[in-house]
Amino acid sequence: IEIEFPPLLGGSQSKSQFDDFDNIQELDKNKDWTMLLAPTFLGEPQYQNGKTWLIFPDLKECELAKDEWAGQRYREATFTTIEAVTNGSVEGGYDAPWGSNLMSGLSKLMGGEDGDAGLLGDQNALDDLDTVGDANLWLVIQPGNGGPVEDWVNCEKMALASPRTPMVVINGALDKVKGGFYPKVFFPKLAATVDRFWKKFECTFYLKPFSDKGVYGWLYRVYPEPWQVVWENVTPDKNGNAEVEYVLVDVLDERPSYAEVVSMLVNASQNKK
Image 1 (tube, rainbow, N blue to C red):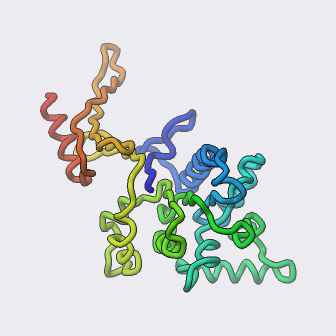
Image 2 (image 1 turned 180 degrees about the horizontal axis):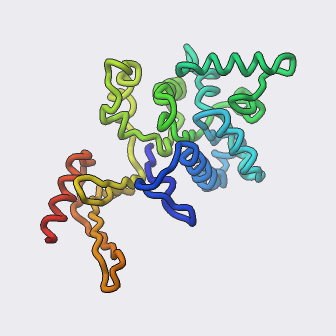
């Protein structure tokens, strides 16, 4: 299952695609959004007692989430990372990004007799997966997007090792993966996962802003409804302030490509004139 939306939109510190922001801000927002989502499942017995796994892209985000969301209800979930899950349950283990082994080794060296120095995060933030047993739900937070492409490869490994566990990917930028953004010649392992794994994901919620060729709009979908292309018509009001009108351009059963959405928005803009 795929969930995709602009994580920094909304609230007093809202940022659009035109504002400056970094990957840490995105990670933090996606972490917090997932922590708010998790209790909607944790009220059901089958998702309690560690059966809902919150799978973070790195150890530091897992540590922050556990520190910042300390309520007992959140402790019904299992806090872990992509690396911990793949190392614990997948034959062949974790596909590590370049440089990660160096940083991990350096952290352990600096820790000396006290163990890991925590350069990549506090190992104590990880819950014991052997104690928890099999999961009934995986919430995977921002894999690959702004991080190593190996995250996407490891997600497939996790799914193959536990095919009955539902995987919900939150803001994993799957458009990039499925759309061929990463050339096969440079990323053969990732390319091999696209057709056999990522293209099988069902998008349950999708909201993506478009700004190209002088037009602005959105592609929107909530499962099981069709896809909607919405044009953002911006005009000045009588006081010279921007007035925004959202115009439904088309409703489609199949997900349109980026180029198709832009073409629809351009046509809508031209027809309005």
